[in-house]
Length: 316
Ligand SMILES: NC(=O)c1ccc[n+]([C@@H]2O[C@H](COP(=O)([O-])OP(=O)(O)OC[C@H]3O[C@@H](n4cnc5c(N)ncnc54)[C@H](O)[C@@H]3O)[C@@H](O)[C@H]2O)c1
Image (cartoon, rainbow, N blue to C red; front, side, top):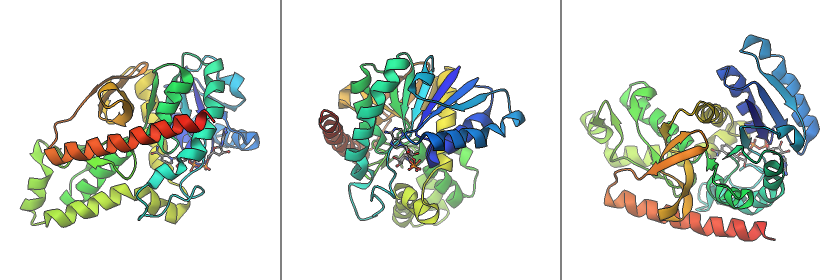
């Protein structure tokens, strides 16, 4: 199995390292970057660790080297720091990167599809959901998904676990909608062993509104907090990307919040998705309160506007 990674900056490099560390899921990883010296250097660096893991070849190449790839992970483009999307008071958040990165996608997606027409395309670049809509349009197929709110959902679980003093793996909680400022944390269905987290927090005497506000801010602006410390959020998303590649290559049919086009909302957004061979195979709406549903409708509306803007920009 061959996996392509387009864009070998902070996120692309972290993804490659996670891919080889998970081990055994693919035989070849091809790195493509407009900065070919960077792609070559990252491949050289990571290659020195490959004897520690199940056999895998890592190499840099041009688009032609993607021929036969089963899945291509796209992380190319401008990040929040370089693109000026690190202001917590800006309601547009990552959508600030849309114009620049839609132009990048208009350049790279046709080149990927020309050599790897059967590959699943996984969109990571921000804003990932409208860029996934653009990618479907440019690729002329539906084997396209974005990492969506999986990273936000993991952050939600980690913060809840901290408060409840349990391990994050035992917390079930999801964020749906946009990977961005309009995202919707589903408090009503968040649970530990079937016990609602809101009840557990109340039992611990935690003031519910304050805790909700703090956790929501932590999730919504986690990228900015990380960027203020290191310049790029990369390790969490790198691990997420590698795990998603594994799920697709093994046709695991894992149930998790990643984003794909959903006809009833007429846009790419995160709901409960079944991920396996070919990408997202089915999507379901979660059980929601009226307030959560209203917030999801608003998030979908913001994404529809962004997706049509992405199409217009790519059309020139
Ligand atoms: N979806 C998520 O949850 C998530 C999480 C973290 C970062 N991101 C996003 O991922 C993207 C990458 O972030 P980063 O920190 O790695 O940025 P980076 O600047 O470190 O790396 C971007 C890479 O893309 C390459 N590139 C740019 N234009 C290209 C083109 N036309 N063709 C090929 N390569 C090209 C650059 O040379 C660079 O190596 C950003 O948009 C960032 O906001 C998304």
